Image 1 (cartoon, one colour):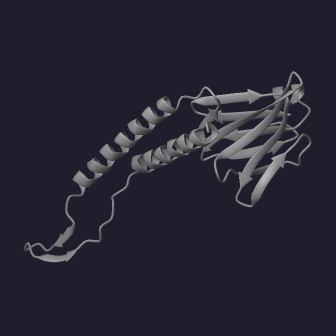
Image 2 (image 1 turned 60 degrees about the horizontal axis):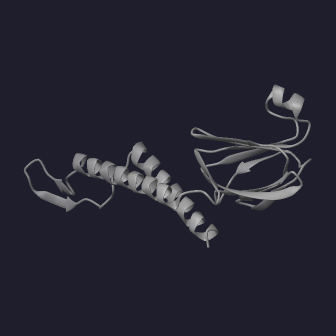
Image 3 (image 1 turned 30 degrees about the horizontal axis):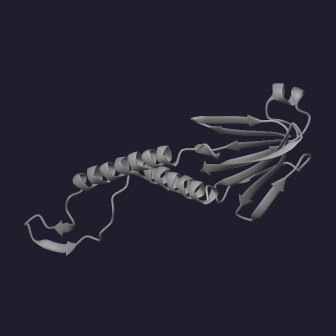
Length: 178
């Protein structure tokens, strides 16, 4: 069975995969060779795979951001289909990180701090663009206080997602390194 993760800055192709375990909103799916075709949204952003490599069972764990997966027995690529007559699991994500013993918590923490700083700067920029919390009449009389809402933009929402993803990666690294 083939296992493929595709993200803008991360790609992984793994052959000889024996099992893929993915968490869906409807439960946990364990995918083996000759699994029925399936499509879904990864709900907790974790995927575990088992691979048979030189008669040794190896496990890998991936943290994903906004991921969908497709299980296919037919193949989505004609060239790959000619080579692979079995099951293929495709995962498409905004970002993906493989949790390995060599992954650097310090490096991920630096990325987290950088994204948090970007998010804070974006929030300050948005707050500066919308400084007034009061509804003022043309005569200058305060009519009422506006509800306190943080202004958002597409960039700030994207940065919030990136920060949450890096928090999840850090949490998973801390759990697996114990």
